[in-house]
Amino acid sequence: MALEVWQIVTFLSGLHLFRGIEEERLKWIAGQMTELRLREEELVYEEGQEPNNLYFIFEGRVQMTRYRRGAPKEEEMLGFLDQGDYFGLEVLEARTARRTSVQTTTAVVLLCFSAEALNEVFAQVPELIPRLDLMIASFHLMLRTNLDWLNPEEYILYIARKHPFFLWVRLLPLILLITIVVGLFLGLYGTLGLSLFLILMAGALAVAGGVGLWIYVDWSNDYYIVTARRIVFQERIVLLYDSRQESPMEQVQSTEVDRSYLGQLLGFGDVRIRTYTGVIVFQAVRLPAEVEKIIQEQIKRVQSTLRQAEIRSIEETIARRIGLLPARSGPPGEATPAKPAPTPMQRFMADLFHLRYEYGDTIQYRTHWWILISRIWLVTLLLLGVVFTSLFLLVKAALGQMPEGFPVVGAFLGLMLLGLGFFLRWVYVYIDWHNDRYLITSDQVVDINRKPLGKEERRAAPIRNILSVEFKRLGIIGLLLNFGTVYIRIGDTLFTFDNVYNPSEVQRELFHRMAVRSVRERQQQAEAERQRMADWISAYDRLTRR
Image 1: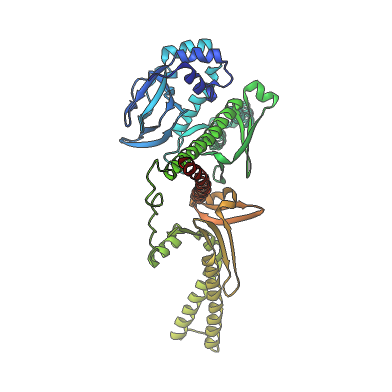
Image 2: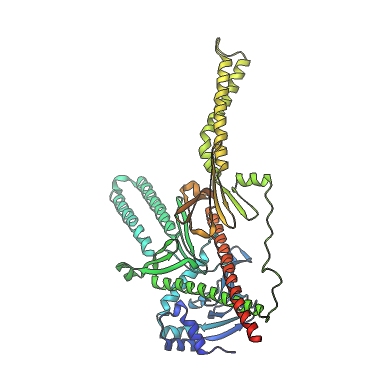
């Protein structure tokens, strides 16, 4: 059954692309769209094909993939798109081919714009042009960017960098400086000679090129990301710093746009996203008002999805209680089998390399081995010095080459006592490092700090009380060896997982546990409320049957 015009208009009015467009123009736009219905696991288009349509998902779900670069027969998942999402932006570009493949995962209803229809729509609704240009730039950046922490099924709805104006603001002083230096060298050409002139010019240009490249890479490493699940700000400073700040979409409270006079002239501004844990700022992004609409649309979509799931559960509970559906034979779902505890060898290898192992529903992390080395290297050298000195003394004494009257026994005993002291210090530092553990269970985060021969400090907090999770990698060593500190805000208390391996993975695991816990608690509360409501309706049903 074909969709009515009012249904398409209602659908379009909820999308950020068409926000603020009058109903009459929306009706005209709806008339330019064609309807396409596809079955489950049907190909919409394939990578490399000529683009012919821009698609909007009215109902159902699709998955987007592409072939891995260098492995043309291996597909890479880019994520799932659901009702309200759109794809096929390549049709807006001249002389291009599809960069991805899209296949349905359920039966879908798609609304399509052909290339000819889009030209007519742009002529009548020109405000769509900058909005779609913004999304095309986001689509290209998404395809070029590798985010290894992202869930493979999590589609990036929007990704951007800071406006290029700020790149040129940083490059301009360098350009002016190198221009002055080159002019100075040209003025001194007659006194420098050709060889020295060429050496100085090559050196100046090489330094300027290196600094310019560093500025560009530093600018290009910061990303602002919106997915259906979360808001993310990723910040990197080359060889020095790596941090990611994020918030689940359901924890976003409000958004606002802040634009300076210069930002209004050049088309950029800040988007401030207030969450339960603080503020995430998308600084100096293009078309900030449109970015805010994207985020607001996702907030409403999450709220609508939760409401629809709740309504379906209520209907099912009531139908089972009054006998319209058979009673559930057992608890929904199956428990995930517990993972076996690691063997001693597995624990040793985890401590030595990745410093992480998992048993049951618990993940344990330790401080990175580089921190142990930084604490123990000096005492290790001193201990080795004592050992080699003792061996040297013994060999000299055995060969009778020691000076007459030298107290060999006393010196040897002194070295043994000194070595014992260094060895005990070495053992103490190692045990102190080894005793610090950070645990993530299904319900809690635990920070254990135990001093050798001293007291043990154990702090624990429920996962459901976590307000925010951030991490930082500091310094070249932290970036090269991939370790850093994870900051977990729980109420007024700050938990820190200090110098743990792969902090982005720790952050991802915490957000995953938070989401699982939140969903489980919400389901339990909703189930209790549904059962209470079903009791009332069941009682009413019995009374009416009498």
